[in-house]
Amino acid sequence: MIAGELGDVKQEIVYVGDVLNVAARLEEYAKREKLGLVVSDELLARLELPPGFVAEPRGHIEVRGRHAGLAVSHVSRARTAPVLGADRAGAEPPLSR
Image 1 (tube, rainbow, N blue to C red):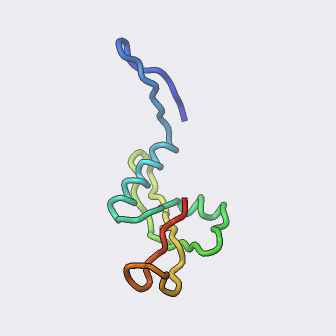
Image 2: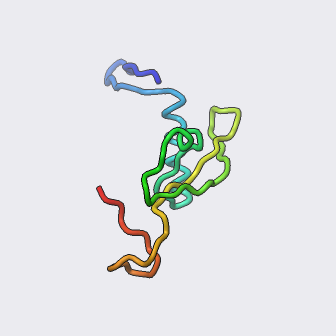
């Protein structure tokens, strides 16, 4: 990632780089597909999901500026018995903050 000042009159700090490009594309994909958390499979391979969470492979997405697609997964709470107070049976409980 590279950061620098840009502009003559009104200077702003601008960040560029592959990490930011990939993050932006993952965010776009998650919004379009109405998913909460989408991560690359490369990241998923490096971490251990907390108990109660699952990863659902979603295939490859195209990332502008990259030659190859990016394998991604949707991470969510595991589906369990109905949650007390949920609007419908099988609803995911809200993520704690």
